[in-house]
Image 1 (cartoon, rainbow, N blue to C red):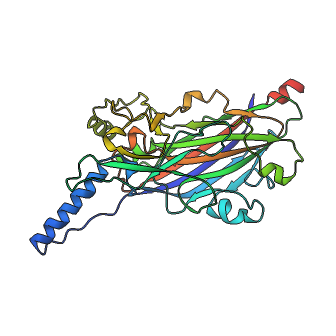
Image 2 (cartoon, one colour):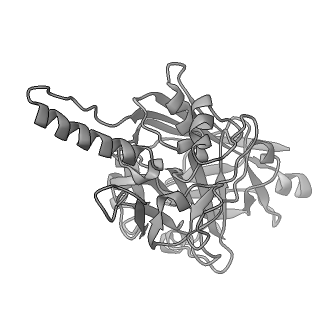
Image 3 (cartoon, helix red, strand yellow):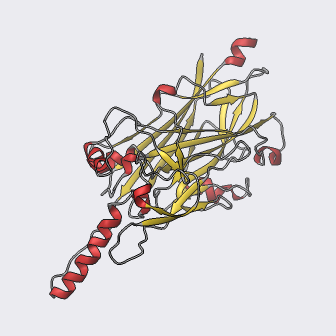
Length: 362
């Protein structure tokens, strides 16, 4: 029997790039502006995560825990509760006194596309995250655009980042040596308001939720032990890809430019970044392209709605440390050429645990 639902609700706002205005006073000025404008369009016609014109602003983020299954949550391993409102202040500012060495990340200026394939090994509880500063060219013709990528490391708390990440502690009271299992509940989803445009719908299909289980210590452990749990060769991670089979007509049309036959209702694989460096040519970056440079990309193994009956990981009796990530996956096929004008997003993350310990020993 499953019980004890945890629900996270995020309210996001998408803002597109700035609109250009052409002032037609002189022909030479007009020509210059048109050239600049075409240059910007060329960048947008590349992959979305090569551009910083897109961002997602978090307006509301709630976490709710039912009190009927002995499971509560905390951001510092000290103060456990069934309900929290998550914000920059909660994750960054207010934790300074109770969890001084946390490295939580917030996107106060909005999420921008990045790429990650999760953790690189079972001794690392930080996702390997890669970003790029934009497309570069070797000549004025803007031919054969290329990028350099850099690895982003969570070494200190930041309010202004292009993704969200935070430590999350589960207190599970079972009274038995048998661990319960933690699942995503069916209510976990990413949706948007009905007034969102087609580009926005494509972007919705590019969001990812990642979770890393670090470890578990007994109840009554001191605060330092709880907060400083590290991987002991047992870290495990999942990446959830919502709306994985949904593709808009616009996404399908844009994929055809890269000779990719994208079909609505059929999942398309994402090849995420695994290595920093370059130059990596734009034409060699598209997931599904025969020119994909496998020195820098690898298949992103994700879970989907039909996998919710499979446990995410075990949560024994005690306090379990995890790390949660939320980001826009720039390598997702549905984020090709995205430059959205804006729409509201709602993200619900629901956890539910079974009661193996109770059922076995009671």
